[in-house]
Length: 138
Image (tube, rainbow, N blue to C red; front, side, top):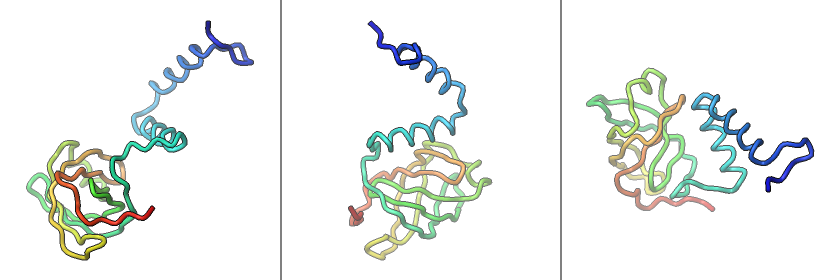
């Protein structure tokens, strides 16, 4: 038996309406909605805690050298802010090689990974191997 809300809509009708609205949303809106919902529900889809870290980064993709800024970092990856014209040349799953200063050890790091996600402001990289020695505050 379906429960009803005060306005007479059943749970399945409300769920169907939500799904219909979501299916009509552009992908970026869906992603923001998912992020908002997981945050409000206390769901953390990240394997590794991250910390804010603003640092220049050089990266190689498509046999071309680029510059950008690290926005945040974890032992499993990072997010790079870069110009739109650069973003348009990149693809999810594409391998990248990055060089930057380690946030805690202050040594120069060269690490490989792949583009995990592309957004309007930049892209996320998942490292091939974990970044060692990263201290993330609680």
